[in-house]
Image 1 (cartoon, rainbow, N blue to C red):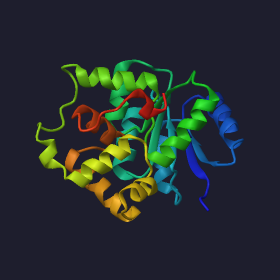
Image 2 (tube, one colour; image 1 turned 60 degrees about the horizontal axis):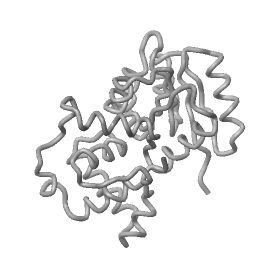
Image 3 (tube, rainbow, N blue to C red; image 1 turned 135 degrees about the vertical axis):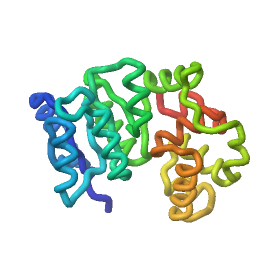
Image 4 (cartoon, one colour; image 1 turned 180 degrees about the vertical axis):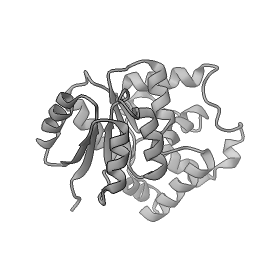
Length: 228
């Protein structure tokens, strides 16, 4: 039986933190480990805490250490911790920047409680979740001249046939166990392929792999692939 999803809330507005905590604690699948009022407090608490969260809800604009810088540090030191940006800033540059530094999802504070809960569960299960607005901005960014160039066009040679198959299934939101069943391999083998994909593509996490797959046209996605 799976344990509860361990969550940390990082936001400098106490009223928002308490409201979010109240909302999430009503769901039996969630447990709040702690709250942090800024990025530095968050990083310090993570260092001193024996138990690490599965998910961090991260505000962007916070004193002492903002959400972007805190995400960089946490992603480097605790790569298994998944970060969901939860902010008032909906501009394209904010979204792309947070995804670039390792965020697994991006939500605005006017998002419905139902969507917040859904996103947390999707990110915990599959490693990423992008709603329609975020997906649109990712596509626009990749189409623009400023889109991040990760590798040359030799991707078909860079990745093995099996790795491309795994990447396609990751992008279609299959879990590790589902990929294993579909390809008749063990979950551990799937993890190995995913780790190889991360190394070969220079991606920071599963969310980065999805963007890589879209960018390099190794996978063709329709909006239905993302439950839009």
